[in-house]
Image (cartoon, rainbow, N blue to C red; front, top):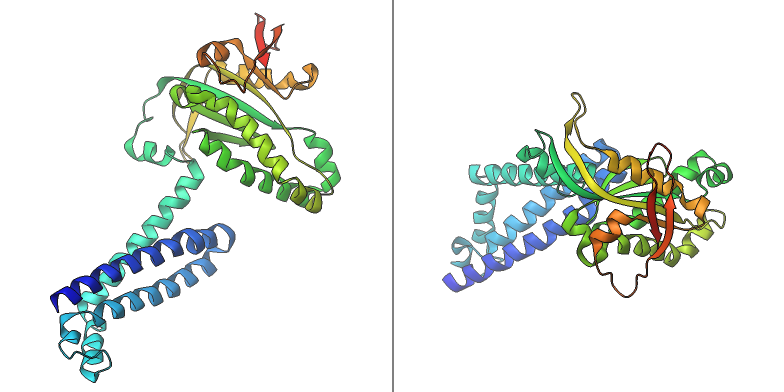
Length: 315
């Protein structure tokens, strides 16, 4: 009986973990993102209740009380299970795990809102007092956005941007990048120095994004009047101040010349006929690049608002 109970407990625990985790990842979190909160909460509540009852009944079938009869269909077995389901312990466990599920979903939603790692920084008060950090910034801008918006119309263009941002987000996360801001059709991505320089992650991110959009070209052609999204990017490196800002709506904000310069660099892509521009500061910081990247010197370029010219490269 002891061995059966142990085996049953392990099986029940694994079953509950796999099924509960799958519901959170594949259903509950997705419902909260795509459905109304009222509809989502109602369906999460009843599906959680069904799962909890199923796990509790399964666990009860392996308990010593039911196994003492050597029959799972014996009436005494189900009487024992019914006693478990109507006990105070069952009610307490039900609400305890319900709170854990709700907290997990809230944490996932907040993590989506602020980006991976940022919510933890809020909780720990990491940026309560402004700090000086070395960071890489990429200003990633959609090519021909004005023309595309006019061609698609407001509603379709908004859905177009949602699809584009959804498709490229995994590549940003894979490169250890942090999405700082969405500004219309532009994304500002940031890397901590070590994360961005490792294997030239900040450069690889751009080319992975371009490839991802090419791989999905047939989808965009079919759904968005033959348009295939393409990006241009400007990258720069340097010191910024980072800290919490805001009263009613708090956020973690970066401040410094690095951001302005990166934006100015990106604005030169069309004029110079390239997809990506990188400052010499960043090229030097990256050190020896992988063989797949061959930097080409553009020359010293005057940037709006900058007194000194800046040496730029492309790849």
